[in-house]
Length: 194
Image (cartoon, rainbow, N blue to C red; front, side, top):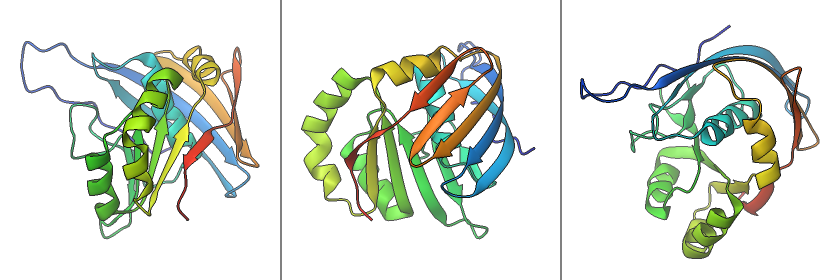
């Protein structure tokens, strides 16, 4: 089982440290014919909500690959939430969660073959999309998805310091379960470029 993240390192000795979450994530992606179990170690920055942490887990599950890794976290603006590089170090996929600004996405689109954004918090996402959407849609290799609030809440209900998660993907939908809770995930496409 590959471990896919290293904890964020705070430079200030008095800084509040990140909280470490571990997840065993079983992915059965019938759309991509990808089946694997991943051991994930996630550092939750003090300013990060559990909702954002679980959206990162969702992003990993939907794009799972042996070379997919978490970036250094919200404290590093030169790395995405997740990315996949080829064996020579070229960025194949740059994945952001939240409400990244257009300038960051423009830089990312120049560095990566594909850029994916999973945004959440519908009210804030609507304001962000009205402000940034037109410019983002000009970026040919960027796709933007919205996670509806009820689905984000269902995912957040599964958050814990040690998680056993199962994700099945079929026909563009995902089903998450931790044995106690489950969630059906159907992202809404805001912007798509083939």
